[in-house]
Length: 387
Ligand SMILES: C[S@@+](CC[C@H](N)C(=O)[O-])C[C@H]1O[C@@H](n2cnc3c(N)ncnc32)[C@H](O)[C@@H]1O
Image (cartoon, rainbow, N blue to C red):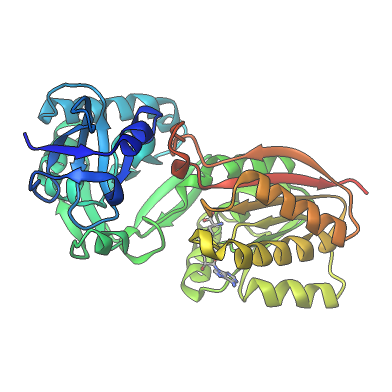
């Protein structure tokens, strides 16, 4: 096995619990092959662990283990089985969930989502791309899926020098799959949609929102109606807004599927819609804000913060007393504290007193790995206007 030597700083990062070593901390690659699993040692040649090596990405090493153990087919099988065991309680409640969450499951750069027995696979580094066939065989062997589709068109693959591709790898390509989340039915189209077909990371927040939602509700950035359709049963009526006409068409179809007669959807830019509603003195009892990431790098945090502030400020102004705001950011670069500070600033400017009902994160099938802060990207605050 090839041995890669890293700096003391890189080794310390791993010993403190992270799973990545950047290229600047590589001392000697010993001509490691792209995507190979390598043995990693520190400057003093002490063993650090075993990792995928990438010859292109700035993340040069993605650690799989800090143990000196054989990483063979059975090792991968056990990791997959462990993921499935951890999801067993979730699989009792829904047939749509994330089976493997990359670093969060100690399977760096591997994502596997399940939609009613159809699997969607993403191999996002040279390492997982190289063993994709083996992973495919193991998934078939262990879980007997109806189909496995690869969705390897994510831009991060380009940083690894990998081609973008998607298509069925096992069984027929299921263009549309019906799934059920907590009694709500959705049509999912993995290859013609955002993410892998659904924002599975919000699944548990849908339930939390349902607990507090009431009266007249507005679901901003609704996509295919995830929040809107979950809260419909607790509300008088719900309006869902999204800028994508495809998403709104899918949301309307989902509403019909659930016979949700108190939910309507419209295509609009949320920034404009909130401004117009403020001018028209509209009022709501529940507002959901689940925008796309407004900041995808450290450099754009300030401008991203302005976007979050604007929508939160406008939403707070539209809420009746006792009204509830479910507000989210899926930017890793926006920490929970920064996000709460933005909401506090928005509340001050809106002259509203706001209490925190709950601070939440991504669903538990997207586990946060302590020591790897990048695994914690979704923050969700549920707040209530009390004055
Ligand atoms: C994070 S996703 C929302 C996911 C959704 N809440 C769910 O649970 O399935 C963000 C959505 O915002 C939409 N979007 C992006 N910019 C927008 C804008 N300015 N106005 C309205 N919708 C927008 C995208 O089309 C996308 O569907």
